[in-house]
Length: 116
Image (cartoon, rainbow, N blue to C red):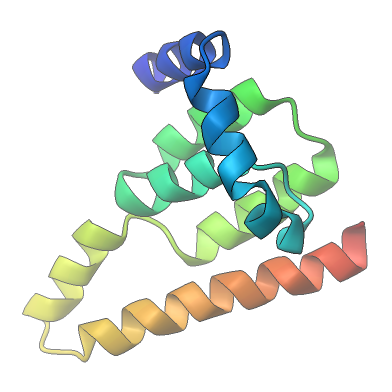
């Protein structure tokens, strides 16, 4: 978690993180989140929740925004590892992955309406 925090903090002072935030800003506004929250979602889904928490700590989000992001990541996180596990169990892993992604997005939309 600490290395991700330092890397994201460093990237805030370079043109990289603002460029990422500007690119994803229109998409993240759907959920009431700033563009930088996209990095938390990507790392939470691809790596783990600890990496996402490190990004969230550097963004300076409101409590409502943290709640939206936490619920979305709670539903859908660590996809590569969990897809591998569900695949070995013999389930329809791709369907489960898409259900989790859709449920995460719908919960983010619902919470935006409720909290913001």
